[in-house]
Length: 590
Image (cartoon, rainbow, N blue to C red; front, side, top):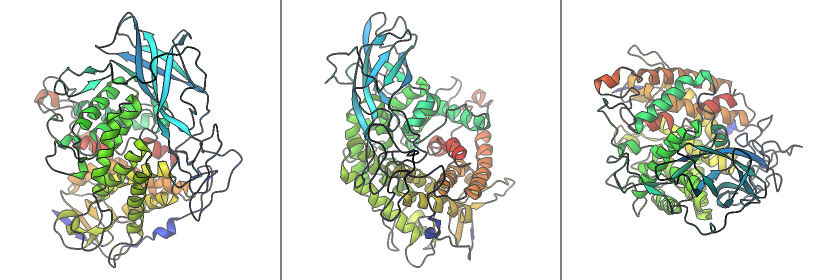
C-alpha cells in the first residue's frame, strides 16, 4: 500500500460557491428556486416545462426535470415519435395481435395519456389504447410544474408478416380515432413468455413477446436516468462508446465460444454491484438497440426476483445495502408497466431507510457508497409511488449530506466532500478525515438525480463543491511509469492514500471524470466559469481512455478471455454506470 500525508492544502468554502443564476442555462426561468433565492421570470420561460399549464412555480421548480434547467428542453405538447416493434420467438405471426409496451416521454411532452394515436408505415391509423404508468411528479412542498406523463402503457393492434421488425409512429397530443377495446384492466404481463435461451436459469425470467424500441435521441430527452447523447453521434467519443458497447457484450457473456472466462451473473452477486441492470439500460438509452433493451429488462426482472422481503439482494447472503437498487426497477416499470416492480422498489426503500445518513466521530462504519444507495432507494420509491414519506427521506439524506460537506464532524476543515474517519471507511487507519473520490462519483450521480426531481440549488452548490474537492485534493500524477492524472483511492486536504498504486487508481478515472464534469455543469448553471473543472475532467479523460483501451485485447478470445476484459465483472458498472451522460455533460458545460 502506498500513501502520503499532506497538510496545509487550501480549504474551499461551500458557501462561496453560491453564485447568481444567470445566462442561457438558468436553473429555473419561471420558478422560485428556494426559500431565499428567486429566479427572475423570462419572457419565454426558457427550459421550464410548458404545455397545458405554463411554467413551474412554488418554493422550487420540482417535477422531474420540470425545474427548467437545460436538463429539460421545452417540448411541444404535440408531436410524433417513431417506434420499432421487434417480434421474438413468442410473437404471433401472420395474424392480428395486440402488442403492449411502455412508452417514455420527456417532461411536458404528453399532457394526457389518452391523447396518443398510432399509425403504420403507410400512415394508416392503428387501433390503440393508452394509459399512464407514471407521471412526471412535482416535488412535495413546491408549487410544482404543469403535470405531464412520464410513461404511458400503450397497446396497439398490428400484424407481423414475418419476424421482421415493424415501424410505427406514435402521435402525442392527438386524439385517436381507432381505439382498442378491452385493455382497460389488462395485465401488461399476460402474454409474456419464459426466457429459455440459457441467459438465465429456465423459469426465472419472463419477457414480452415483442419489444418496442425508441430512437436514442428521444430516450436521452426522456431522462430515464439522465440526459444522454446517442452513441456514435460524435467521433471524438468513439473510443468511449466502443468500449461501452464492447464491455456490455462481455457483461452478458455475448462472446465467442472460445472464451471460457465468463461472467457468473446468474449465480454470483459481485457482477451486480453498482446496479448492473441500470448500466445495461444506459447502453440501451444511448443506442436504441433492442439487444440492450432485452438484456436490461431480463436483468431487471432477475434482480427484482432476488430482492428479499427486507429489500436486500439475496445472492449476497447477508443484508448489504450496497447491493440494493430501485433505479433499474423504476426504469423497467416505465418500459413495461409491470406492477411487481413497484413492490420490489418499495422493499428496497425499506432497506435504505435502515441507513443512518449522519456521521459523527463515534460512528463506527460509514461510506459514500452506502449514502448513495440510501438516497437512491428513497428517490426511486418516490418516483414509483409518489408517497411523500419517500420524498421526505430523500430530502433528509440529501440535506444531511450537504450539511456534512459544509460543516464536517469535529474540527475538520470543510473540503467540499463528505469527510469521515479513515477507520470508519476502511476498518483501520485512525481518525484522520478522508473521502473517497470514486465513491463520491457514485454519490454525485445520486445527487444529480435528486436535482432532476427537485431543482434544489443546494444540490448544484454541493456538486460544484465536490468537483473542486477532487480538483484540489483528490488527484495526483500517477507513477511507476504511468504518468496520467488519476484519483487517489482516499483523499482529503490532510491525507492521501492509494490502495493498489497508480495501476489501481487509474481504473477510476472514468467515473471521477464524470463527477468533475457534473460539477462543471453545475458551476455553469450558477453563472460561474466551468473552465477550470472542464480542464480537470479532460485530464481525467486522458486516463480514462488509456485505461479502457488497455483492457481492449482483440487477441484475447484465442486465449479463452474476452476481447473487452472486465476483471472484476463489477468494473462494467463502475466504468459505465454513472457515466452514460459524460459526453452530454462535457458538451453542455463547454
